[in-house]
Image 1: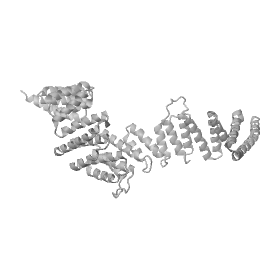
Image 2: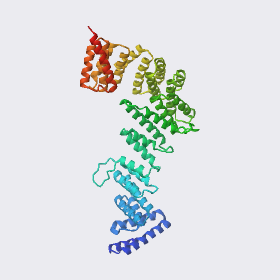
Image 3: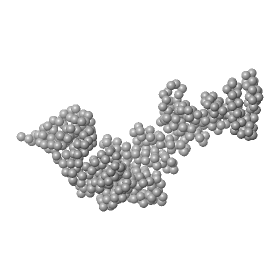
Image 4: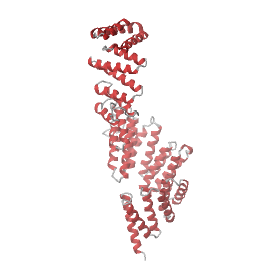
Length: 523
């Protein structure tokens, strides 16, 4: 082999390409014999000879020689020489119509760049390879690695030759070329994450909904789609736009993952179907009045839930309490709530918040019962002692105050709120909750003082600042200072014409009309 390598080098130096090719072919054949007869040690010795021949200027147009030399360069830490040899091997394999060999060598070169941390170069190599041979069985895998390396590339661009293809473009490109590949589901999850981060809710949901039910990402996709729907619905609600239609469509989509077109439930529930069931129920309970539909689906899911994760069972039963209570079945809701005693605090807090929202919309005869359920759930959380965080404890304290107020126990509610407000003077939500309770309790002097304190701690023109002005004006009206209230409202509108949006502006104008009538009627 040494003799063949010397002859090959001499022929190359003399410019005799025919002889150079002949000796390379003989060297390649001899290396294969060494592989077969003498094992890996002598094979590596042979590869080193081939690599040395190339390194000394021998060059090579023999595919086998180049591949063996590239492997030897890599094993010896000569990375640049290895990459050059692999690139030449890719070129020769393409000329020889050997796409599988070309793909393998290009893939190896890209993997080497990834291994040594050259993310951008690795991404370029993987992408170029995938697009050059898109029908290759591993093309989508290569392209996904291009996306992965692009996402993890933190190096600044230094030369114009480096690709500037964006992460988002690569994800879209992947789904355009390989929509049915196994890698497409991962691309959809990543694409959904980008769109969700950018608050493009419809696009995020479309990406998540594209993940196939048999994928390893199916559960995460359903959870992400549900999360995006909730964020979208909340955004619409804050803007005063209707959202019931979107909520209903979303709930039906999740339900369709569980029920057949004929309405049959699954004989064996997958975790994906369970998450879809709780996602549908959450939408029905929070954004529609289909409480009975939510109850039926949740009850069915819990019947076949022996092998379900404990966290999911707690969440589902929490929603079931909500659904049953919403239909006025308070005894059954209380029984279901008792089964949640061992649940996680965050799940019980969700029940408390849900019951609080229900109580705010319910008729007076139902509101008190719902509030009592809320307080019962709060007692379960408090029984956990140190198991709850400071943030959870704060949320619980506020929920208890609201529950006491909804239950008609206004003196207790005001007393508790006063204590929480004194303990958290910089917590705007706590201070506002206390001030609202004073208004509800018609404690007008104290309410006026509390809302003035909130005004001085807020940025002028902010939503909370404008609410503080409204409630101060309301307190003044009840204290017989309608002139002062009218002047305050007019000044506020002159400085901030939108008055905090359509809803609050309407309330401001109604209050102003009352104050002006009252002022004109005064002697």
